[in-house]
Length: 99
Image (cartoon, rainbow, N blue to C red; front, side):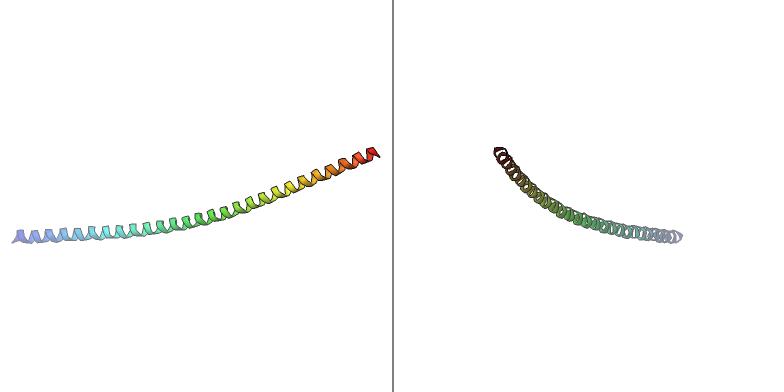
């Protein structure tokens, strides 16, 4: 009888230990799930900021390229005007020398 009572007590102790281990593992699992969810949220937010920054940089690059092309066109116009003015000046000089 004592043996059976001891076996029952041992079984109860093992059940108690298993229940405690199960509760501890379940708690660790919940904590890990919370941690991974928080990390995932942080990564998603970071990714969204990077995507927004990339879009802003692409827009800025487009603006700068457009401005560069505009300045190139203006520079070419000024160079052409300068050549015409130099040609007129040279012609005027020749007319003055000939007169």
